[in-house]
Length: 549
Image 1 (tube, helix red, strand yellow):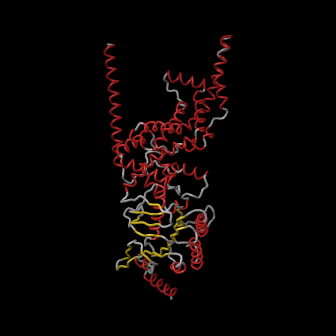
Image 2: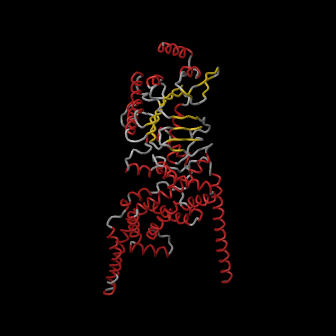
């Protein structure tokens, strides 16, 4: 009977082991298949995605670094860069997402930084097997965790420190000291030890809640370190310079894994209960926690450097996937002049975009009819200017620019919280561009400048602002309905336009950039084609003739 039971037990254990191995292999194959299928396709936004969580790293950097050399919140919102981020984001980890979001804000980089980033991107493009191995490791070992707490660990570890940490060491020694009382008197010694245990238990359970709050960030950091160890074992990845950084920082930080508090809970198992009581008596996890936080604080710079290197790896694969998902793309070329030249540029968020080719060596005013494509075109230029300087990728067949700040003034709204009217918001937006122009090389895009005021003052003020910008180290591209600006600024601004063709059954736009100022208007025609009452259209046309007579 005992022999049969042992045989049965061996069979059960073997079957369980085989099942576990098969399940792991099947799961890995499914993961690899899913990664293969998703690569080179527009990413799908996860239902659990939290932009507030992803943006925390960038917000912390910008809060503590007040440099104007970045994509500011106005430009970011004008260009709908959150959706651009979503269109690019195919990262496998939260660190990759956070780092990508941050990098899309950072301007200007330099040629050396772009070249280093491009080397890693092309390595993953040319080595699909290694790329899949890395993606699978990132997804399985780290994955995504909203509000993972890494930013707090990097920049404010002192906040998570437990106060009176020397007291915990003292309380852990007390039970050992009181055990000596047993030599003199067993009853008194037992009472003293029990009293010490009760005190330590009260301290333990009071502090345990604080440590539990930080445990997700500690666990996530541990997963990253283990993943770095796994990355170091991928032989084909050893050729990449960034792996030297990851190995170096991992060796420096791996010791912290010895001090990770487990904060075990009683499960009813005798061994677990015994370990829990020892933990309580000697406050083991509490002391480990403080040691862990101390190490994080002392090595915060190395931790931050590892975070950035790890994020760079994940982001580089993401960028290579983004490129493949586009109809076509190019690597930008960087010059020293303020010119912007492009071939077949398009807006990366539009499913079936119309491409344009052009060269802007001087400041320019783009005029044209309503809905003719002015705004979309200048947004495409601005977005590609940002993508060129951050991820070295442009939605175009060629794109030549210089390293500069990209700034926009486009989508204005009343700021009710600040009590600012539309016009006040507008002039504040323009003022920040004027301030930037005094300090940095700048490429700015302005849509319908000063639309929030009357015609006479709008044209006068707009002409003055644009003339001022023409005297700075700025390439300014402004879209406007005000044809008068093309005449006032003819000596300082080149002119381009978009136009339409009026057909019997509607208005047709080709969305193509053309030389010279616009000579057509379509607002009244649109009223007609949108089935406004005939009397309204006739009256509007009559009034328009009176104004232009």
